[in-house]
Length: 216
Length: 210
Ligand SMILES: [Zn+2]
Image 1: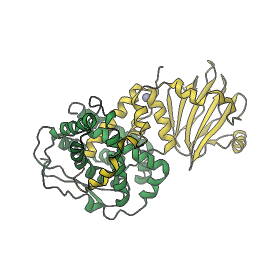
Image 2: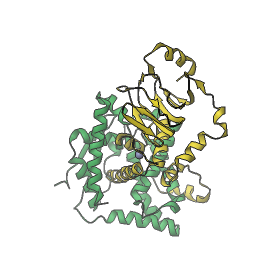
Image 3: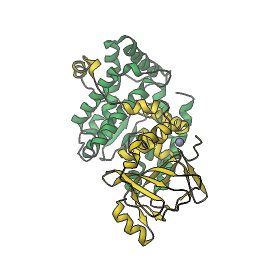
Image 4: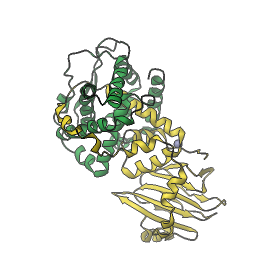
């Protein structure tokens, strides 16, 4: 995999500090899992976290007894640290893709968004939503802007945005200052996972009407 | 000379957080000692070492969790959870990959993410944290002989104020760059570049020492 586009340090710092809303946390994690470059950055950010934690003045202690009773039955403790584990080993994008693109992929509630383009909303939490896009070669997405942050992770295929190309593993960042119009390359079907804050804003009327039905 | 200088910051509740570098620069025995304790817990299930480890980190963790918006009572239970998982997951500690303090930091961070998922973080962040200022007061008289600790504060203090503030908010207040942009009424791009520049400098200054 040849990853060219990474999330900015601000995103990776927020990720390493646990500051991100859950859906943004998940999509950054999906990228970090397959990107050795970002994995290094996150490792350093965590290292810095450990040092800064240590810089806190000694203050309030919890009596150790409070924990003694608990850690007696250590072997039965179940604490979910799966996140720490999974950022620790090299996963590959295909694995991630397969969790979404398994046999049930076609059974997802895909909605047509013009010819050769399908969208599917996976989760909505507060005003943040995670969705998938499936575009056929050469398809142009309607021009749109954003009301908040947006991260797009390419899972399969590629698209152009202006002069840049985004391929499998790449992350594209957008926000309210960005207006863009991705074009799927002629190479093949393109599948992306995206997390968007707020509703997308389409410039033209037709996509706006369709949007009401798709719910993006 | 930084040794006697106190670093004051006010957190989002308007309370003062005090970082207190103290003691003379020494070798960074502290980090090695923490790691030794954790390795002893890992290999020998030593409760004695765990108690020491516990004594070193619970006050720091309570302070950290509180600065991120947990109310006092809740902070204790969060840190208790972190420590229970430190004990039960000690086997996964690899000292060649991370120092003990980084390891415990990631456990605490993960716990905060779980809270975020369950919605507790936001609820807690809106509560009053009246006792925070007192909480941050150093209680131990014993001087900390830990060069690394001073180096960290030194490096953070030499950052331009605007970068330092962003780094501080990200790490100690748990605010995302977007929340910071809203709070300071700055363009998102400005906050992103301050975070990047600040982090790059800190990253560089720690490369050799950690
Ligand atoms: Zn990357």
